Image (tube, rainbow, N blue to C red; front, side):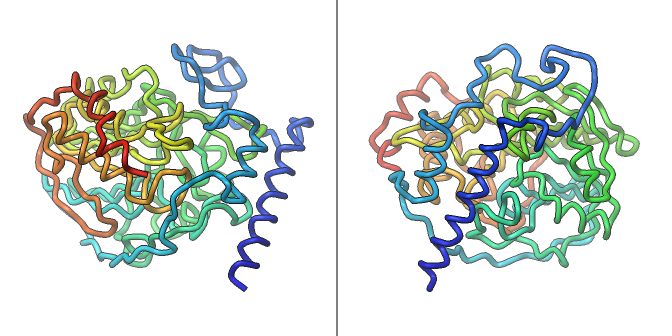
Length: 389
C-alpha cells in the first residue's frame, strides 16, 4: 500500500509540474507582478537578476531539459543515495526571552533558526509545514521541527529571504501573524506574496535598512539566487540575505538561500560591523556525481569560503537534513564541512549547532584563527571528501 501511495503521489506531482510547464506558453495565466519600480543594476524593470556574474540559476542543475530533470527526480532514476524516512528529533522549549548580550540559538530545521538576544526573538525563513511545495505537495520532512510551534516564544522579528516554498511558507507565516503580529522584513516584491496570508511585511532593496527599535536595525544584503512560485513568475520578486545590527556583542548575518556567485557578498555583509553569528546554507548542492555546488546553492566548499570572508566568529550550517532537495547523502554536507575545516586549519567547532532542536550559546564576536584557503581546492579533491555520497 505504501508503494502504491508513493506512485500515486509521484504521478500527481508530475501532473502538477507538467501543468505548470504547459502554461508557460501563456505567461499571463500564472504570471504575477509582485513589484513595480525603476530599473537598476539588478532589476530590468520587470524581473530581477544577479548582476555581474553569469546567471546560471535558470538551467536544470544536471543539464538537459527541465522536464527530464523532474522525471528523473520523481522516478528516482537519478542515482541518488538513500535517505532515512525519519530522523529522531527531541524538540526543545526555548525561554520566553534572552536579555542582554547573551545569544541563544536553536536550529529548528532547514533554514529556520530561532535567535534570542537583547530581549528579541528573531526567526529566519520559518516553515513548520510537513511538506514544501505547491498544493501541499513536494518534499516531505524527514526531521520534525526542533521547536514545536506551540512552544515558540513570542516572535518579534521574522526575516524572509525569498519566495520559494521551503523558505516562504505561507501557512506558517499566517499562524505567526495571527498569534504574534511580528515585524516581518523581506526583499522587494515578497511583501506582495506575504500579504496574501493577511500578514504585513516591510520590503526593502539590497542595501535598504529597516529600523526595528533603538540600537537594532535590519540591513537587506545581496546574495546569489532566484525566485518563483509559479514557473512563469520567475524573478518577479527579489532574494536577499540580512544583517541584523545589534547594540553589542556583534551582528547576526543570515545568508538566506544562496550560491557563491562572485563571492563578494559575504564581505559586503561584514562591512556593516563584526559578525557574531553567520547562518550559512551548506546543502542541496549535488545533482551529479562529485558535484560541489550549483549556481543557486553553495556546498560546503563554498560555505568555507563564505565563512572566511565574513570574518564571523561562529557559523551555523543550515539548509540540509530536513527536506530532500538534491542528490547528496543525508549527512554528507556536515561531514564534508568538518573535513574541509580541519584540512584548511580551522576549528570545525566554529560551525556550531549541527543538531536540530538543541540550543547553544554563541560567544561574542572576536578574533579567530585564519583559514588557509590556498589548500581548499586540494582538500575538496581528497579521497575522504570524494568518497562522501
